[in-house]
Length: 202
Image (cartoon, rainbow, N blue to C red; front, top):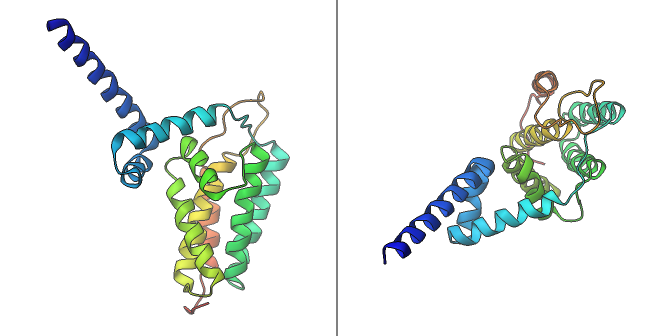
């Protein structure tokens, strides 16, 4: 009886620590998964499967010329927002997919892309989902400019995370996860400059 109690206590402690690690890694995505799955056990199984699947991917850093090319593409997307918000969101979504493809992520399915991003960038995956919702609604012409602008900001957060800091001369394989602060400041300024003077529904 005593031995069984000790074993049960050990199992419970192991499960609790495992849950805490998942919460720490996935942040808000953890609670979202619990709410979507309906129970904690199913959600944690799903999150561990994401980790396992992600570990099999060959994700690589961007080369300096790739980073520069994608940054220029983003700057172009952002500057074009004021004239054509719908096109800007479409191009932003396409740029996310292209950056992911070059880095080695599977890109065929949106839900899969979001899940893979959540493993490395749990703090921005919600921005991706929010931006994609507005992107899809914009295609139907039912979104106002303010929501479109917010979606562009959400895409920017994801682009910053996927691009990482501007590469320097360093050994291949060095992680570049995390937003480029200089890039974020620059895009903040550009977004402010491109704010439309009148709100309108597209």
